[in-house]
Picture 1 (cartoon, rainbow, N blue to C red):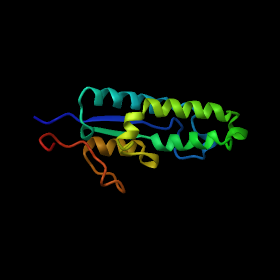
Picture 2 (picture 1 turned 135 degrees about the horizontal axis):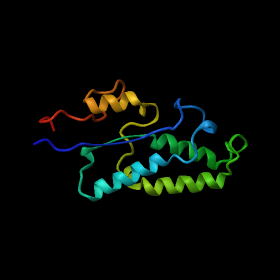
Picture 3 (picture 1 turned 60 degrees about the vertical axis):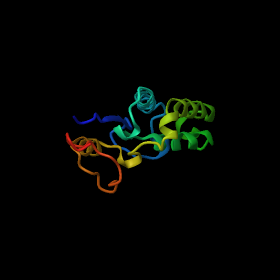
Length: 139
């Protein structure tokens, strides 16, 4: 009997991805939901090796860190303290995921093609060391 693999996905809401920080989402709720789901799975005894995370975690945190410096305020109208609050909330919801190495796929690797490849068990170009869903009987 094959073991289950859990795939958690959260990414940018914009049609395009990887745009400059001032055009990014401020409240990236899917990141926090992935962090909460990850914590629930790990707390239920699911090993890290059975969870694949495809989420712009560090990508999003980098934008929030930039926002805390005030460099984005002129373009976004969002004060640095709000970026700091959002950063702290995201880090809290994703604390276990961060402590255990962060997302398997992050930054530009968070896209529909990666999700498709991971679910089909095909290694993603440039991310060959990252996990994919194994066919039944292979893990």
